[in-house]
Length: 196
Image 1 (cartoon, rainbow, N blue to C red):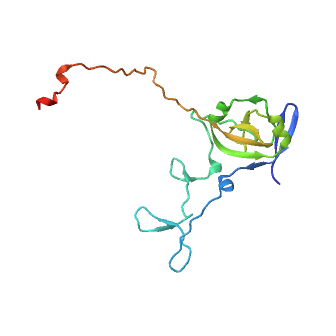
Image 2: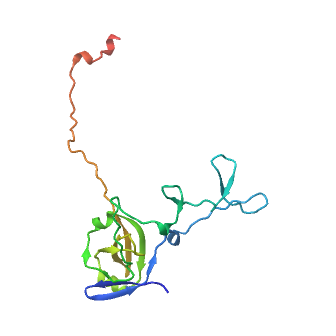
Image 3: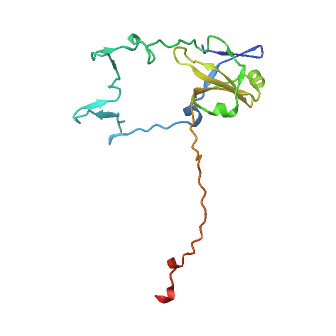
């Protein structure tokens, strides 16, 4: 059974199942396959550093090592910040209603990089949202990650954007100079072609 998100807006509760908008679903995708002279599909592999051993796809795994070089499992690791403190644990946004009270400008909305976009098919919610863009904390799975969520509506459908704010530095020239045309009337620099 699919999970549903609950949105609380102006004292009303709206519920809907989010559908992730995937680039492959929107635009489609291509796959490239290579075949040998006999028509058999080739599999991908790579050479080791010495160039002597063929390593088939999927045979290499990334591992984490402790200070002694021993392999360590992910569930044995503890996430801390730079000062050694444990990060705050957030509940999933599916567990509690998302309260829609803070609106943002178009510019604030566009100052983000999006990790995911979800379609929320609830015409009543879309009507209640109107032309506003609502912001709220959003965590799909819960845990230590908390993104900024935005909800906006278009043509009777809502879209939930999940991402993080990015600072876009702007370049300017505070001491911009002015180019002036200087008339150079130095007669010594002029060439007289009739003397040549």
